[in-house]
Each structure stands twice: as structure tokens, then as C-alpha cells.
Image (cartoon, rainbow, N blue to C red; front, top):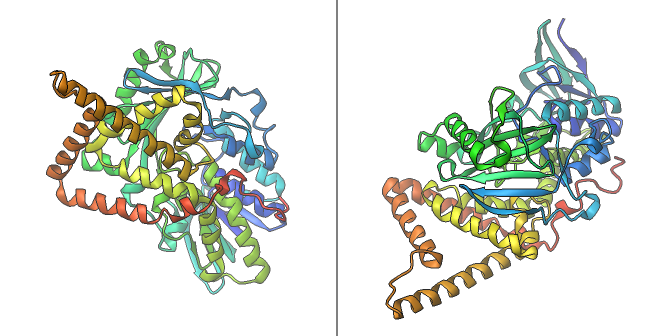
Length: 498
């Protein structure tokens, strides 16, 4: 026998975003079903890092104890490599404990995190169908029918509202014409679990190499001499330059053994797994007649770090208000779900559009040496400039992104770099030492050579990239018009009853 039943809301996908949506709806007394194709616990390709903003939501949901957060290593330090060079090794300056967030993150393997969150939703009253695949989604009148399949047969669930929380290959998004396949906004990755790791359990490690640009690698300690290690790149780059993510991953793991002293004796305890994510810049519309999209299905992933656990849960908490309103009014057309679009953009656009702008600039692989040089200098400045680390460091994973303050810091730094480099170059020329090849002059040379290489390689793509930069810049209004980043206060509102 297959699954069957009538509900108020059907949530396709039981990851963090689907579980958060089901919990938020069930807490309101809404009859909600979750369809999850896997039987939990199951593995999921991810860095497993839950940042302070995500831990704040987990605490609000009341499942921190079930996940054993108090017994997990508290991550509040980071080490950043550029090639073999350590550019930064210090605490995470922007983990300040504001607005109810802790001053640290935790590594929570996804087989444990997702299972705990979904079980928590079930305890709140959600009906969870494990081992059930979504095969079709159709809408007739004001009812949505979800065709399902289990090992025991086929079935149908019906509801006036369906939520797509079913990831990159979202069946729900595809059914309503919202499937995303733009490789400019898709990240691809490989991940493995290591054992025999001897590293500080409070310190995460990230690294940048020119052969997997744009992208980065990571090693996150999970405790007990184990770690989550992986690397990710932009899908567009892999396709244009015929780059194998699997090969880059293998080379990264080989380098890791002599780069990080704590990984010298590390061995793989699992097989490498691959995955993909949708970045925030891919969003055009996330609502439709009969429902909405959240999490990775809705492209809520951070465009700079590819972190999406927190953003997925946030999108669901926000979306649950729209759904509750539609159910109360008994109206389920596209315009009735438009509030969701307004609400999530008001919440995310302030920081996400700014990060998308920078991610767009850094998409061009020919500029890898230039941008790696610029970001390395940023990390080196952050090592001794606490205020710079606190403000501009949020571009690499902070919740409270402040575009105006970041822009002021970055451009003042660039001005100082130019002034210092220009003065040094003049002194060298006057002294007869010739033009220096490092500092500002070196960076300018990197920019020029990158520009020439990009144009010569593919002029049409180069012009398209420039157009994308202009388009991304044209959307930056919300990033500078709001004085406070709404994400700082979190997705919950007074009166939610959550």
C-alpha cells in the first residue's frame, strides 16, 4: 500500500528547511505532512557547520539537547590558507553573541542534524512519511495532488498548499515552472569524513588554491580525531574549463596532508560524496498558485560561502507566516502567496544582494590570481585589525553583513594600498631600481593580464560577465538603504506563537 491522506499543507523534503517549515506550521495547529524520500538517518553532502544564527533557531525549536549541542566542540576560531601560506589564524571576530546568538558554531553531521530536526517536527504534530518519493505534483482547482511512491507501492496526498523543500532537483519547482539550472549560480562539491586528525577542535580550517578558483576547501573538526573535509567550485567554471571536481578534490586532499600538520596522518573513513547547491542570485520568483519554495529548492544559499542550513530554516520560518495567512483566508492563488516574496526579500536582500555582487565579480576564472591576492591581503589585514575582521569578515560567513560599513573599509583599504604602492613605485624609479613587481603595481599587472586573457579566451562571455556585474550592481539599493541587517534579529516575529 502507498501513502494517502488529506492535509492542510504538504512539505516535499525533510532536510533542515522542510523540518523547520513542518515544525512552524504544526506549532500553529496546522495539519502538515512531510514527504522524505530517504529513511533517516542518512548522509547528506555538506560541510556540517551550523553557524550561530542557525544555532539560535535550533534553540528556539527546542531540539538543542536532542542534538547534543552542549557536548560538541564549540567552533570559534578559523585558520585560512592561501596555498601553503597561513593568511589568518585567529578567533572569528564577528561571533559577538548579539541578538540571542552564541559566540560559536557547531559541527553537526547532517545525518544527525536532519534526523533530529525532523523528529522534532513530528513531536510538534507533523506527519512524516519516510522512504517516500515525490513522483508528481499537479494542481486542480484549489487542491494540489502529490503523487508518491514507496517500496510498497504508489499513493497520493492532497492539500491546498504544497511547499518545495526538496533541494536542487526540486520536483515541486519543476512542476510549477520554477526549476533553476543556471550554472552561474550553482555550486558543486565533494566531501569526505576523515579520521586520525590532530587539530584543535575549536578551530575550523579553510583554504584557497588557484586551481579550484572560484571556490574553496575546508576541514571542520567533528571531535574524537575526526573531521569533515571537502572542497567546492562554481558549476559554470567547471563546465567552461572542463574541470573535474573529483580530481580537484583528490588533489586537495593530497595537499592537505602536508599543508595542515594535524592532517598528516589523516585517512578517509568514508567514500567521497558529491553534491550541488543553488545560490541566492538565482532567485526570480519563489511562489506560485498553491505554494512556495524554501531552502535549496528556492536558492537561498549564501553566494560566497555556499552555506545554506541557516538560510533554509530562515526561509521556512518566514514562509510559514504566508501559508498560515492563506489558510486562514482560504485563498491560494499566486497573488495570495506574493507576501512571501516581499517578506523574504525584506529579510535577505540587505546582505545577500551585496554578497551576490562580489560573487559575480569573482566568477571570472581568469581573474583568479588577482582576487586571490586581494582576499589574501584582506585576511592578513584582519589578522591584526580587529575592527576590519569584525565588519568585513562577515563576507565569509557572518550573519550581520553591513554593506555600507564593509564598502567603506574595503575602499579605504584600496585607496591606502594605491597611495602606498604609488609612492613606493616613484621612489624606486627615482632611485634607479626600476618598477616593483609586488604591492599595488603587482596587483595592477595581475588585473591587466587577467583582462587580456579573459577577452582573448571568449570575448562574448567576457561581455556577458560584465553585464552580469552591472545587473548585480543595479540591485544593490536595499543593501545600502537599510541601516540594520534584518537577519541580525532573526526570522521570528512577535505574535508568531513559535
